[in-house]
Image 1 (tube, rainbow, N blue to C red):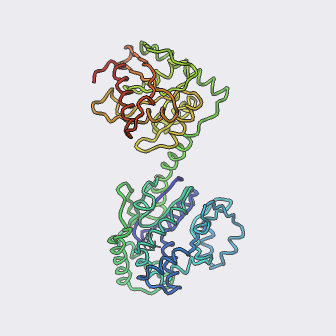
Image 2 (cartoon, rainbow, N blue to C red):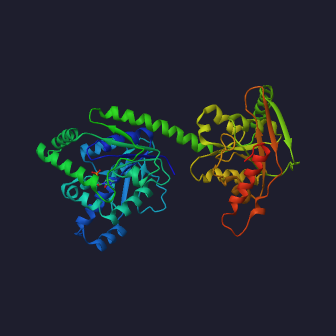
Length: 477
Ligand code: DC
């Protein structure tokens, strides 16, 4: 999945303007989800289909083709001003859409990458301005609350963003369309401020409406949006709340930009963390240099004692599994072994530039905690296939051997999948400077020996690994 920014909030909070600017600033594909509901509304109006005619609506949803075009803000503004035909703009643009289902969405980027603002096409026809007209305005809320419409549009919105770095604005992006979005913003403004903005907008467009009417209109829409049973406007628990009532557009853009930049940097760093660098002579020299330097220092700070119950095969792949007492324990295993050990380390480590660099020298494998990290598993399997040793500290062992800790099956599963044995290691130390650190290596465990018809057989294998680590670390359970 790409990088996703979700901007939710009530109508009139300034989502459109702000989202366009952020999209342009960070080169994100801009998706105005409200426009998808507007297109369906227009199509139903054009085909004269009643809102209770679910079969008719389903047919429309099956056949409808909604396409977005991302164009530069400057061009968008020009078009709005001069009402020029979009076809002139399209001549200079390159279709870069790679979607599997091109009939559903299309995003066009310009070469200079300063794109934003959606032009909207319904069945091939430019309806950007048409979907903002009165008849659509009056019906879109009802249409957006029809379950079938909602399901189809949410699906479409996901396809439009697939594989891209995108910013989506709407009502339910953070809660429903992309609940795992990288950035979640809830953009709000007081009713009074939104009324003021709408009146100014109406003036520009020569629309006559009393203040009273505008206020009522906004309040009714808020009520409908917030109380809807389907896709209601609610603030996601983890969304950042921004009240734009007393802020200028630039102030809001700056505020959101800061958040987006931080998260985008993390996203890109994490993406790069999974890319193992090539083994070059320089990398080997750096690894050897760092390893010797660290081993030298390590042995000054600690009295290292290594006991091995078994003579391991030098060319065999293994999974090493140890108890985790301190951040220094993995380092000890790393520097005191002749063979390279590819440890699995939590992703947060890679956020630090220096550690990121070192991690790549030692081919450390990143893992995202609290989720099934497929990329991490793939890297582990690849390393084992290449006869490497992969080091894992099972969770629940942070401070020695926690009582009743849940035994995670990661190490056993990996060993099973790669058909390799697990070396249990018990570490014994207070890790106070100038004290003894004892590494006790046990006999390799073949998890396959635990395989039975019982679907939970892996639990038994994991428990055995854990028991061995407990024994080797001199702890009693
Ligand atoms: O943002 P807008 O005014 O263009 O939205 C049009 C309608 O669509 C509005 O009534 C709210 C609804 N909508 C929705 O229900 N969910 C979204 N993600 C976006 C818009």
